[in-house]
Length: 211
Image (cartoon, rainbow, N blue to C red; front, side, top):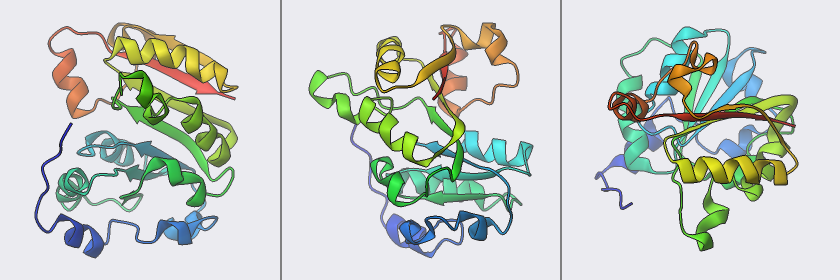
């Protein structure tokens, strides 16, 4: 998918008070970033940010970091963030493969993966956010009792994830092939894409993984 570049997006992101600059310099010190000892949860591939900003509003005693590698996409989230009075959420424009350089072991309590790029070609397997390579990264930054929550509308990616995650040494704690008609859907916060897709009657798949 080719993303349209928005002129000036990098400059706006660099100047935004909501974006963490030089995040690797915060490794082991994220409590200082937020000014409290509250748990930290992150979303990888936040898109326009609706999901994580809604979580931040619902749970003021949890700190959130939205991660988006594409500046043009992150900029849309920043535009929404400016209208909210929240002090428990920041953003980063980084590649998720570098998260172990940004967070110390055990510094993150939960990771959300929502509607990630399926990278369907076999040669791109390592780019999938539920691949063994990425699960190894998450293993380095999550607390021992931390979890990964993954939602997708792509059956192929979901079936792949159900196999790849255990191969990486993790356990599938729970999963469903129809989130919105299951007990796992209670309290579910939707992304923009999820709302649009599910309104057409299409199923949403979800799993929760732990060590």
